[in-house]
Amino acid sequence: MIELVLYREILYLNAVGNFTDIYLKHGRTERVRRTMDAILEELNSDFFRSHRSYIINLAEDRRILRGKNNTYAVIIGDSESSAANADHGGTHQGIEIPLSRSRYNVLKNILSDSVE
Image (cartoon, rainbow, N blue to C red; front, top):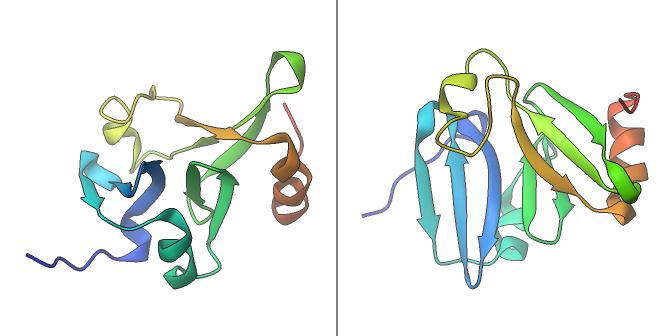
């Protein structure tokens, strides 16, 4: 069955081999047999590849978190999506998505946000 997924419902995407898991608001997850590159070509400019295995929706509330040893993460989520955080491995404070060092400056410029 083919199901339409609205951009605004997508929190993030995660590559799993030749499949991509699409994590949606309200705790839903859809798995599609498509590569991240193929999906990224179809998404609008609200989406950003934060890591080789992750694409995030920049329309969601987000912040950059600096970890130890020059590691970074993007924390996404707001009050509407926080109910889904437990299902997606997050907390009430948001879902932590890896951010590669090579993509850090690009995202920082896009968000004009400060690192915590």
